[in-house]
Amino acid sequence: MSAETGYETESQEFLGASLRIQKPPDHCMVYDTSPSATIAAHDSDMRFVALNNVYPSYELSGSDLIVKTYQELNLQNVRKLFGDRDYDLEVEQEVDDGDGGREGGGDGGGRWSVSRNKRW
Image (cartoon, rainbow, N blue to C red; front, side):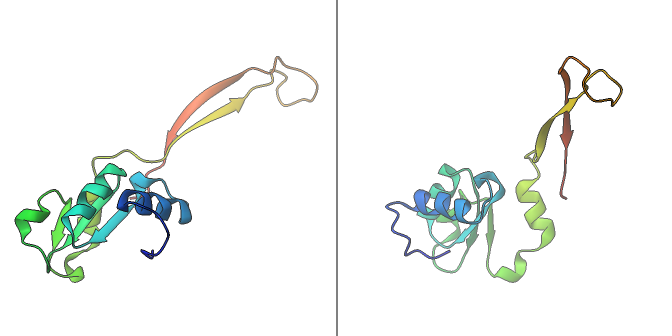
């Protein structure tokens, strides 16, 4: 996403980016080199991957992952970033109209079920 979006803060930019890609912030990762982006990403409930080529490592210690090059960023590392979160909790209502599938009967009640869809 571009930095020329008109938002006032980095946190707003990150949240705006998650809206544009239609993903919740906790499903997003931010890639940057600055310590201030680390704070903004975490304020937005996003994971942060720091590219360590501008600032010393101790200034990026709040990052979820620090890499020297993007080649170090692999699927295993990304899975570890999101491993502590439980995603895609879906609550669905199963409608049981009480007539065994026939029209016009039943009480309109229903049961609630919860399903977990893991994408990993």
